[in-house]
Length: 184
Image (cartoon, rainbow, N blue to C red):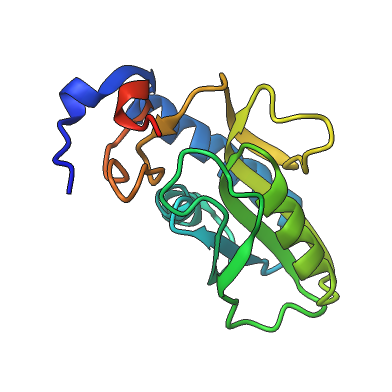
């Protein structure tokens, strides 16, 4: 088991806790305005989106239902395997309901595409996708979020819920992980 040292492993910080909090509040206001008197189901994609999701839910000034779904396409690698596996499904029946799908990062767009298709097959009133991060070169064919927090370069980032092999999720910022920490 590798012991990590965040001060040595992080190349640079892209977004501070203060920048993150400000952007989360902006997104929450946008969603609250969009859904007005509705009670949307906010579906968190575990585990990466968990920090963003909780902060977003706390910032919402409207009624919401909270639920969780878990999928995997990375395992302990730094690149997607290309196969999305459903690990934990929603507990809520979303038929006829407005759904806000909360994702951590759009890299290949494969996970988001899979989840949009899965949710759409369940006949919700609508599905709005929100991703905390979007890589600048995620590709035109990739599924795109309706709303995203920050656009980032094509580098491996950790913190604020995002990890590498289970490490770094608890960092309060988004940082670029040094390549030697995840070289395969």
